[in-house]
Image (cartoon, rainbow, N blue to C red; front, side, top):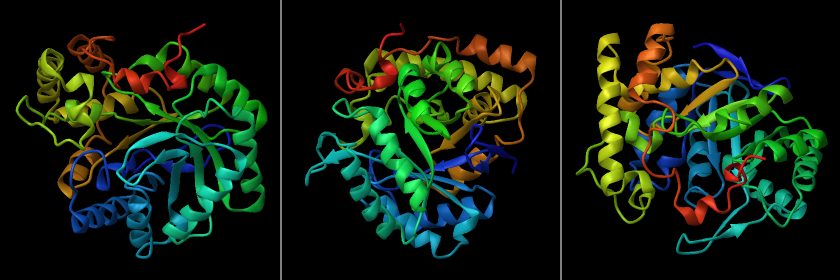
Length: 334
């Protein structure tokens, strides 16, 4: 497993990270024993970056990772945690809170659930429109100085916010969606990250399963599955997007790889400052994702991938409009 440093100031992490969200939330029921086995297999395969959020399953995901941590050396792992998303007893969303007092409170509960005395990267899940980003970042910076946090990260913010945050405290990485079907960061956000020395941890590299090569029109998802409301999984949008997957399947087959592997390898090939996060919650899916690590597509292969899935080819937005309206990363450029 290769390793990359996240930005100029961040930690060294494995070239592939594990996003643990699906083990607790958003993609239907998960098997607890299989989730723990997958976490163990990831660490044993050399993955050091584990990503979670305190609102994934309302703390369930952190407790799951905490259980896995007891079987591994804490100092060998980089735990990335998102905070600030507010939820109710029925799982409903009720906004974001990134006030300094809330930051300290959220972290106290996170440390308890994880069973550790520090978090490697701590980041607000979204920009809180009521709190200047400098105040939120400054509060995390105080936790860095106190030893409870090692690095400050951000999630789904635009270039202007990145610049303001970086002026207040060094930022290790920006976590943001990036895949063959979601390339919005290329115009302004990715160049800003590179100018500021901020790494990128890319989630959604398989576009919620669309680019996995395992999704079909009849697959479906329950009411608590994000894909039940995702525009890209609806009607004609889904048919269009699955046609793109079939075109990509031809490129993958020529390389002797799976669709998922070629999609992950494409993201990794966009720069050593980009670390793909894979959301595997089963060992077989993890093994498939790990097979992307040695692919390193060349110029001709990258051209074939671009021909199969050109920029802007996806049908449907990456989130429902109600959620996009609150995402700083989706604000118009300029």
